Length: 286
Image 1 (tube, rainbow, N blue to C red):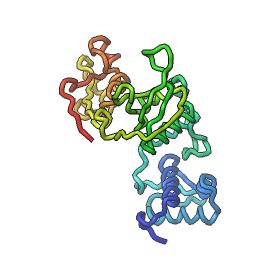
Image 2 (image 1 turned 135 degrees about the vertical axis):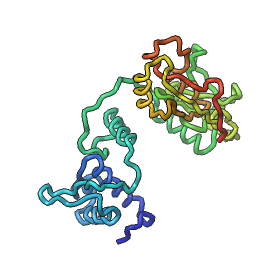
Image 3 (image 1 turned 120 degrees about the vertical axis):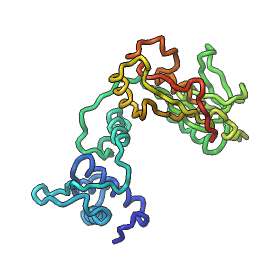
Image 4 (image 1 turned 30 degrees about the horizontal axis):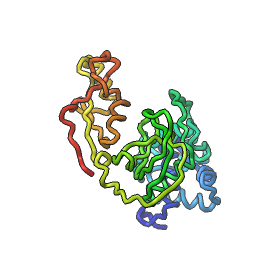
């Protein structure tokens, strides 16, 4: 049995990642965990556990009294995917009903809740048509309800990407009527009735292909202690952190961070962060 990760098939590697995930977050893993998660036989699950031991002999040891493999003090991850973001994303996905608990890798789910967000009515057939158009480099004729017009109207658009602004899903597309690249809310696409070759190249969307770097720092009117707390919240180093965002999504990013208004308009403990490079934001073209 080879211990070289480069020779692992994708399915095997995924199962070994699962073993490592359970070891790190739960402290233990056993054969039945692997069998249940992936629908394996006893022999297959045993083979995966043996293979993981071959890759990382110091990461786990079998506890005969508990009848399970337990994490060892010298544990060192093999797959470099044990970041908090992946764990919290699974937790949120289960809580929001996006991921079934049976498909989640977390064995003992902690109690969790979040501030409610209104459901956005994206029709699956609409999303499928938009994604198909992106894949095929096609334009589609959509009936779109905008805020500026009381009645929905038909227009041809050529979508090339999907974007999320923190609350709503958009498609980034060229509008043939206005002859510009724009954002279209998927929930406002009421109907689709035709498609054609677009002739539009995504590379021509400068706002989408240009990355802007925001430098964020604690509000200068906060006390030193408060500033240190905010630095911890945002993972700042030396009182600042850089956030890269596509120029097409800059408006949404600033609004979500509360940076779309004058910092003086709110109390420092409410504003908490400020944009340090509002005048000199540098752009990177993709």
